[in-house]
Length: 114
Image (cartoon, rainbow, N blue to C red; front, side, top):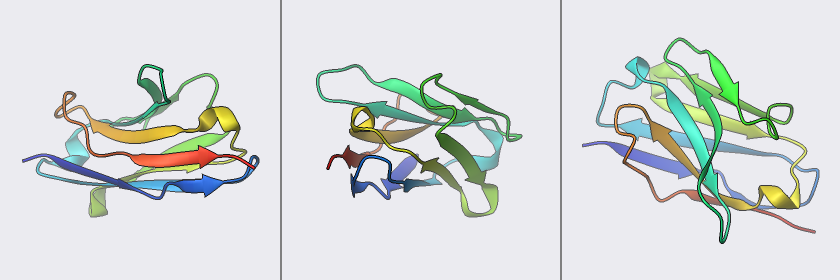
């Protein structure tokens, strides 16, 4: 069955960087677009970035100059490089696959605070 395991979150100061990873299994990873979403306390889950099966990327407007999504099909993994982090980036970050849009892993907590 589908499994998505996020990692790499943590506590970082404003202006800092983090690299999130998502390891996928249970489907043919290279065939499907992958996305990162986030959910802040009291807010709805929102799309952060998306990468297609051929590598085409799309970002939420507020993140496109600071975040970079990438994928490694050989290792069934998708990554999110986050730079110039702001307190409003604090959230639980989730990866998601077009293979099963309704499936969510446990997420990884990102906290941006001084």
